[in-house]
Length: 410
Image (cartoon, rainbow, N blue to C red; front, top):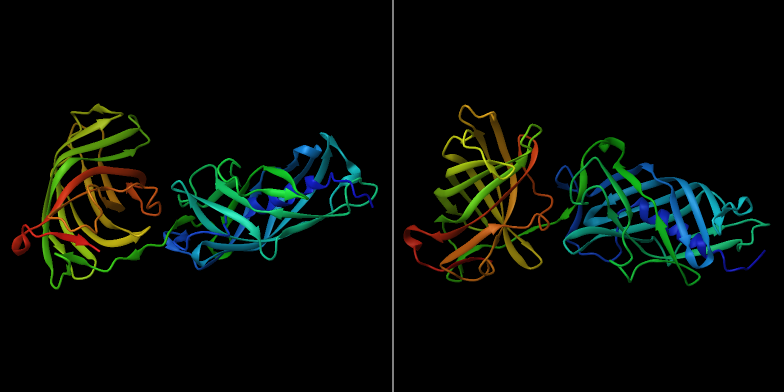
């Protein structure tokens, strides 16, 4: 039994497998949650579809452990952004100074029980994978005449990222890999004090009865208490209206040329704008003075029918101790001849934020704009099943008997 320090390579191997298997974190906000089909996950099974060769490298020792196969036993996505499972690495080889060492084939399968919780960093979701118990992910085994120690413990933590699309985009599969060490310098793999790195990726999907369903990371949003007028929660339905501040632009891609279509509207009118007791509201909105653009070029032959109308419902939500609005709506875009575009259905949910002051501030008017999709990644807008975006802003105020009174959301 040789006690040489080369085994540190093994450390990276083990940790690599762990991180690739699950998208998780050990210290994350409880607001971060897993979602499937737009709904928060409380318990769903997850598995690997495929994996690129995983390379666990200890640069200072010239050692690499490469594993061609990664599987998960009892892989679970749980409530509050938590996950758990047992990682199994197999079909592994060891390279010493870039030369295959047949004598140092590791004992298989390499087994690691892990847990994690979603975290967010710079408006993106990541996962930090840690051992399910204690500080050791796994113990690697080697047999004589291999010069590496017969048993090596692997410790540390690994932050995982989604590479083909953001983790918040709900998809049937997610490809994950270890995030850059520069982004998370306080996390990493260690083998007897030596730094180990991980290369390679794994493709994850829901399993059992949820196979093929779309899933991803998102936020749990709690409802905010009430609309307020001059500091007092409203006691009866109140009327409100809006004036456009910045042109509203609806943008989406289509398969035919031009690939990107934009509808820019300069006028907005609101009918039956109502704030209800508690934290909800509704209105009928109409857009007019609209123009169509294709790849930023005007399309005068493709004017949409006006007004573009929609019944809108909304509610207040709180995120990071700030109040926002979530609105849901749907409409149909119909283009006049001789436009090559035809009819498109628009539907979805978008976030609104107050732009001139926090929504909690008592003001006679509130300037609102579309919130960053990074804040509300699980809320989506589509145009005939194509992903779309909306921008613009408007000034909101109370009317009727509350005209001129200061109001807020909070």
